[in-house]
Image (cartoon, rainbow, N blue to C red; front, top):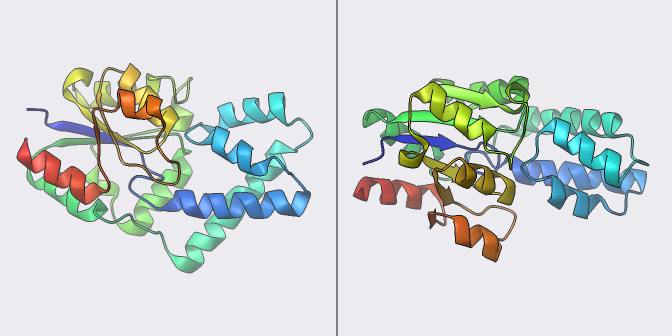
Length: 215
């Protein structure tokens, strides 16, 4: 039985995707960026470098450096004022994994400084044996590098390790790494492609916990 699992963060453990979406659209409306909603959809799961490349190619009229500076500042302000929204089942699942001696990793496209801040806000930092962030890898999701790096640092064989994702890019990265990818949909409805490559589809992290308990 697999005893290793790697999580994405935003949209899986934390409900920050909704906060990001809200702030992203707020900024887009302020600057008259009519394609903001489509750009947001296309950037789900990408690291900052790949987002910059996407904007440079498709929306050169947008000052991307200013845009992400505003995005980071306003998101941080919202989180400081309202607290980190933890997804239902996050604490229960991570606690069970710890109690049952699983190796647990985090593989997220988010920058390390933000990741560590988010984890510290929730007291979950010590739940992970390794944390691989977007600024630690050359190629972001959907490339499998970030998941292969996490598995290597955990000493796990990818084919015997679960990954928990919510986005197309993340799911593709985990699948191409050879892992058993569990899809827990968040803000984006799963496509036929996503359903086809997912090892399992669960409605929530509590359902993931029930599944793992049965293994």
